[in-house]
Amino acid sequence: QVPLLESGGGLVQAGDSLRISCTFGRAFTNYALGWFRQAPGKEREFVAAINWGGHTTYYADSVKGRFTISRDIPKNMVYLQMNSLKPEDTAVYYCSGSQSGTSTTDIVQSPQDRLYWGKGTLVTVSS
Image (cartoon, rainbow, N blue to C red; front, side, top):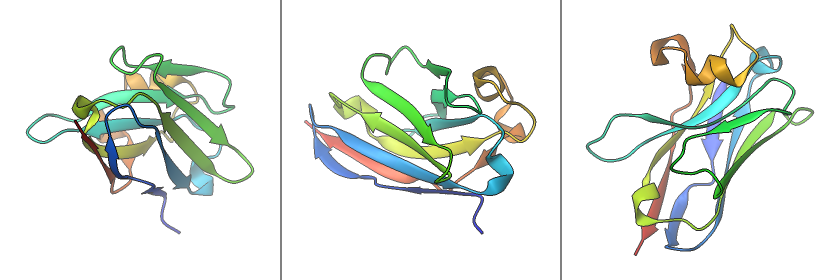
């Protein structure tokens, strides 16, 4: 079973909405999960995180109020609902998981080489 597998990326216009999904293996059930993104020519950056129970979330300032992270525990899925998309949101979006922490802090503050990663899904926002 692939530990983390993203889906749902695509090409949208500015102002549109898109939801991307990540299927995670049972090893991540009791740990925090998150989304990062990497735009062309830029470093990978944090987007959103959710704690193990799905009750606590945390967002980068650049997406706060537009993006919503959620998780469906029985289905082993985590989602990123993206509204009011902008061309600067264009990036490969990566699902990330911790196997050492349960809080959003563990996603936000852990060195990226301490997290587990999916292969990413491309989101392109045209102007």
